[in-house]
Amino acid sequence: MSRFAFIKAVLGPVLRLMFRPRVEGVENIPATGPVILAGNHLTFIDSMIMPLFCNRQVFFIGKDEYVTGKGIKGRLMAWFFTGCGMIPVDRDGGRGGAAALMTGRRVLDEGKVFSIYPEGTRSPDGRLYRGRTGIARLTLMTGAPVVPFAIIGTDKLQPGGAGLPRPGRVTVRFGEPMEFSRYEGMGRDRYVLRAVTDSVMSEVMTLSGQEYVDMYATKAKAA
Image (tube, rainbow, N blue to C red; front, side, top):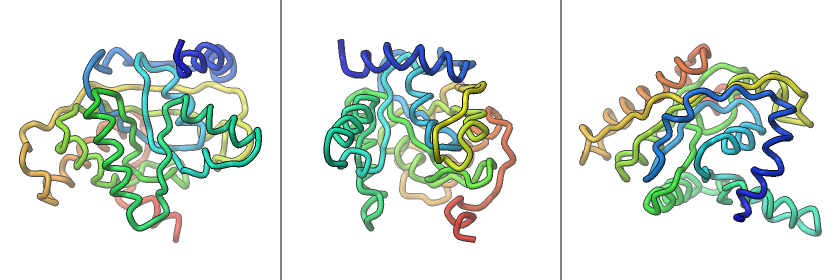
């Protein structure tokens, strides 16, 4: 049994009992081949809940500080997060965005599932913010289809992303795959990148029911 299968077998029933998840459209995730999952980001536990209820293992970027802790606690955290599919990347440096993009490309080139939050950070107020064009670059670079998803309710159970979450109902909703082969060879066109990103975010908004804000979440946080 793989480490991920073990974690899913042990933690899955606990999360089902605690969050009573309603999972919709998981059959929209292709059974084989590279896939990009792109969705909203409300709080810390999103990255724990969504992957455990997919029909394939999901890989995603996480802060390297989650796996660099010292002592037994640090080693357990590293074992858990990497076992769940997290790939540690130093996102604070000037090359953080490029490193994340190249990591995603490597995962997809291996025919796996890569998850990304196009907003780039957690929503500061529960609304859906403008997507970064990394999602467009990734799908045009690899040809992988994009499956939009929405997580609903986690911000009510873990406000601000801090502290232990409260029990409650969570919904994870997957949309139909989106492909952008019509834009092949146009990955450097900023208008194409924005159009692809906005179309993905439009689907995420429909799935989540969130109010959309045409501003980057990082700018809203700074304000």
